[in-house]
Length: 484
Image 1 (cartoon, rainbow, N blue to C red):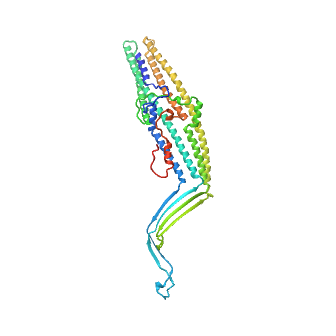
Image 2 (cartoon, helix red, strand yellow):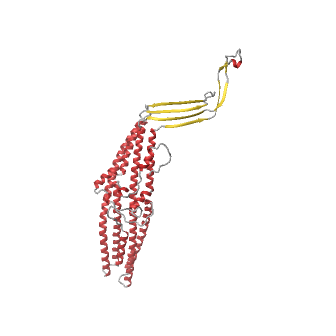
Image 3 (cartoon, rainbow, N blue to C red):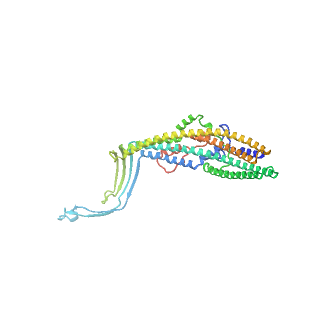
């Protein structure tokens, strides 16, 4: 009977989730460690890469807004075949009818007709001199929008890293639980063998054998359930991390990176959490929209320059070429445009009020999340100590029940129940250790500081400013920069 307890003990040593002490160390850059899995998710996760593409697309809004400062140049070229005819009134001349003819000086109505090829080539340049500062405000609004996209990227990064840590620990937990259930089946098989031996010599009844057989069948069913859960966790791991799982190393909590006191954590989260940053830049975006709409009430000044060359522009073909060049300044002053512009201004102001409320909502949400996760972490720590005590007591109880069963003071059912209690206690310990690590990552994310530099993982990071600088002042070109 002592063999069964030893097998159970080895199953926990083999599969239980433990963590290393100390904050230093070099992390391996592969997914069989928790830091390596976070790196793989940071590089490979499609959801994160999709959000990076969204940021790069949003960057293009800035050069689009800056285009309002730049001239618009258009080249025009037209040519074609034209036929024209007409009747003109001219007096007869002596050369036409002869000297002394009475027709000299009388009206003549000749018809002229000919084909010609008129051609025009020209270049027109238009520059906006003033439009109520709409271009400047649109540029600032586009920059605010890129800031929103970057903060949203930070939210996505935190979500993916938290998901990566969670699925890593889930797979580690489910692997440990699967191994625990397999070892439990071995224990129950040994228990059944010993019960049958005792039945043969008449120490127990057929009922005891049936109870042992029932427990073994239930254990095998638990193994099948654990295998199915382990397969689901492996699939989720592949989806989030981007690579197949190998033999996973134990995971470590990251409590040392989080604030030591809850009020400090709340203060940091309300000020620095990326979801709060999204709301803050959303206010800037809305305020600038008000200014843009107000710009429609101001005058607009433009400067237009045109250069053109014309060939064969009339029927007579006397003007073979004609060159034109002019510069035209235009001032447009809006007086009344139906009232729609005033409605847009009022609407934008209401949106500003909404965005300010959204900021308060975001801050309250992150604060509530910090409080919740903080409590979960504390509960997970306490749960570990409780389940460790539970496991130790269950081991003592199982050994005692077995000794008592040997002398006839306990039944086989009592032994089986004690085994179940021990397995449940070890399952609770594995789950508590899993929850301890996941809760520590949850707290770091709730504060808004779950990122690779904070975790001490020194790898090349995606910098959204690189692509922004590559496209901000671009005047032309359709090639996409790599953004790295």
